[in-house]
Image (cartoon, rainbow, N blue to C red):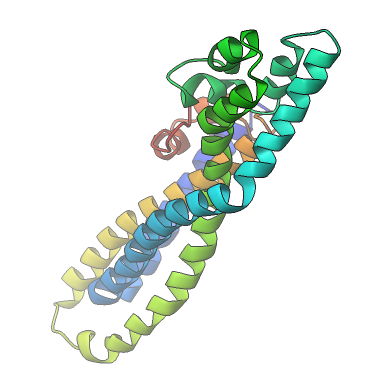
Length: 236
């Protein structure tokens, strides 16, 4: 099954491109451009506000609870006589590759070691939260908000299509109109496939890269899908 998955994902890329090229060819240039504008503006709005709101949500609703739980784990570890045992448990809560990338290639142990040696467990919990859990949780929240906001914005911008009654009458020679529409389909496919790559990234992130049919190793073995996946921040 593992060997077939890269081929399946690349086949998905080809299907999306072919489907959108054909459908956009039939729609013609003007309507295809409107569709791309819809996707593009929705993408930008969802990306910006998703990231902005996720930071507010974490700092306002989640941060204190995260630091409290981290402090409890560190206290339990110290109380049991295992000074750094809590660090190992905390490190396992976040994918190792994210730990490596999130804080200038420092591990959770590197960030918290001095605090623990100085018996400042509260400082250690705060440092771990700020350096690792904050960007990790914000990444998850912003990804979820992205799709919610993207769907809402897409629906709102559907009203743009009302302009079709005016702009679709702009004279464009039939064959040229269809060819330009097909080219727009390529651009639209790129946006859609990047969104699909983000979905795959979220799944890999949540499952800690342990899912049999969708993991970073399988995606690395793809030839086409990886071209979209590699542009996601933190994705490897």
